[in-house]
Amino acid sequence: MASNKLIVKIILWIIALLLLAAVSYGSFFIYKTYSLGNKITFVPKEENGLWSTLKSFSSNDANNLRGAEKGRINILMLGIAGKGKPGQNLTDTIMIASINPKTNQVALLSIPRDLHTEIPNSNISMKINSVYQFALNNSNHQEKEASEIVKKTISSITDLPLDYYVIMNFDGFVKVIDAIGGVNITSERDIYDPRYPGPNYSYETFELKKGFHHLDGATALKYARERHNDPEGDFGRAKRQQQILQATKNKVFSAGTAINLRAVNDIFNALGDNIRTDIPPEDLESFFNLARKADTNNINNVVIDAWNKESLLKVSHIFYQDKRAFILVPRVGNWSEVQETAQEIFDLNKIKRRKEEIAKEKANVAVINKSGYSLLASRIKNLLSDNFNYKNVIALNDSSSVLEEKTIVYDLTSGTKPFTLDELIIKLPSYASYSLPEEYKKTVQNTSPDIVIVLGKDIVEKYNKEEDSIEDYRNSTDANEYSEFRNE
Image (cartoon, rainbow, N blue to C red; front, side, top):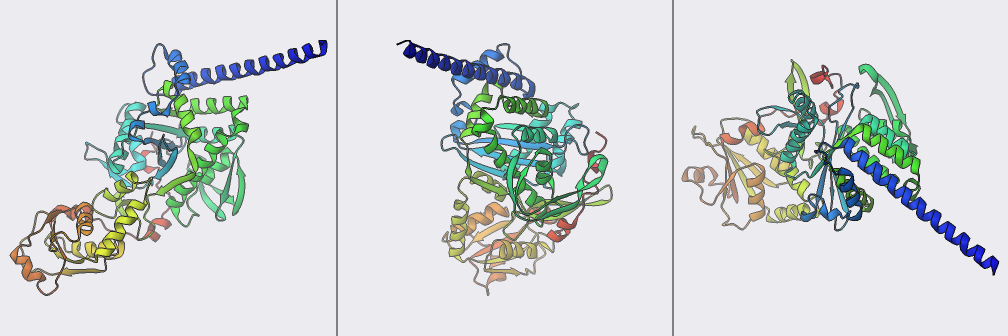
């Protein structure tokens, strides 16, 4: 009898200790979440911030987060070098993580740092990775204001509502990965880069053999940043960054890390010192749960690139202080293809099916140049033939010297080739008409086209940039990588 009572007491003590440990761990986690929220967020602090954080643990439903009502939460993720490092505020990692809170589906969209764009509501254009630093310099270094400018710029490119943003520096990246005990990756090739950026604008060698590796924080950072020895250049780097992100997420939410109080504490400390965001403190617990449930085993990874004829970008250049700088621009006259990819990233088969319908239509297309820019017809013809895979495209000469202000696509099929017409209207861009003027009927009379594109002056600026080869871009160096903002 006494023996049974002793067993009962021991069991009760074990239960009590487990409950105490759970409460202590939970209290620690709540406190760290509250402290982290106050440290990293740009949003105003509430007087009852701790109470808001406590309430968030009792109602940590991801459906309360911004974007959840649309079935998609978009988080802009920016990586910077950080204070005291070369190019400290250049956002050389730009990624949009999209999560469906109902299905836990995840998609990652990487935007290359050399993408050339205009800042909304301004006449200022620059590489996308310079926008944050430019905004800091022109807002008295107000981080929140500068971050919002970056957010609006990338939203204008992708046409996505960006619900939140997160900015992390190199130190935070290294410390988080070290805190979780490193990450496992498989390198698809041997890496040997003797020009990896070192301290004080120097270079050092980074080498990694093909195959499986367990990386600490410093090595993972090099693996994520290296691009000189990658045959896909900046685009290959974006893929490796997505790979590291997936590996880190899996490790952070593994059972071993979750029960390791020291690891959790180190993660929170690393984040608090090296990350900035507009996620309110009371939403952090919902984000932790959202990230934990995210299905990274079936993730959609997309890198916007200029690597092949299906790529949505092309290589061009500008001159900065008399020096040639390579840039990336849309292959068409607007952001429509990038926006389509961004919006359909959970189901890219929609884009594939539309291309199949265009191929079925087999439209005969004639191009007449009335823009005044002699190279425009050949560039549009090559775009349609080489990039869009149109099989029957011809450029016709028109004897009239009269120019057209607007580009118009004339459908001569009475609407029987709607997919082709729609693509041309959106991507050139242009206007639609179903009545070809008499003067152009004479020009096309011996060719029997289904669709006639009359090029106007309105799209000259969109296609007058000189196009460079991907080899030129790949062989370019980083000698002037930080030249725009070295005096920070």
